[in-house]
Length: 201
Image (cartoon, rainbow, N blue to C red):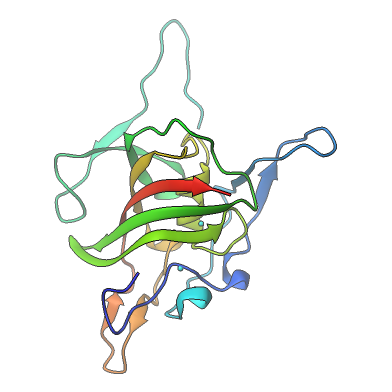
């Protein structure tokens, strides 16, 4: 996860990522999947270190209705990629659908990722480990990995491209900000992620 001497991380303070979660009822002892809430606003997060800073229904009447899709402007992402509208302004596309399991709350998962901002690569990592659904990562990251609303959870072996809006990322403060006022992630930036779910413990 090292690309700059001013490297920031995807982990944000737990208090800034506390969000309502919906837990399905399950028999005693059974594992429960938690989907991050797609309705509660998240406080803006600032720059910090790795462990202080890196987580609708389709209508069918007489025929299936395809999800609404949107081609994203090249300034934000590859103009040839078609994204599906997800919850709370997230846009995503699965370039590879995994064949493994999906994470449950508390599972320690490992992911490979590349992060672009305004078309420029600013961060990347191999086997980045975090506890899914526990608030260790920005809300948008948890939602992209665990699924939310109509956006399904990722599966091991899958790769997802996602555009995460500022409100689910670093908000108005940005991240990786220096004394001269410049930031590796400027305020109000949309994060352009490519995420590969490598494994689940």
